[in-house]
Image (cartoon, rainbow, N blue to C red):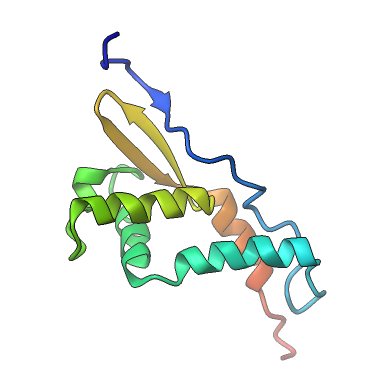
Length: 124
């Protein structure tokens, strides 16, 4: 079988809903399940290399980046792949295989939901 398929979505472990579904933190306490899901997202964001990778992907002119475009973050290529996998599993990135390369894109819906979740009213 040829490895030259045009595109395919990269399969990773099935994730629970990564998009926070609860009201802003200042409005209500998240349920136990929502808190666990949110903690997994924030855990993925807590690594400096992952933050740099997210920034490189989000700021890439094409709106997506191949691993070859973001591998200069001070760690080896296998470590970059590991961190990208963790970001995908947390739902922060989507990925698409094109031939032998995997292109990553920020999941803007997740970041919009996180922005809403973290919104603090001006009265505080």
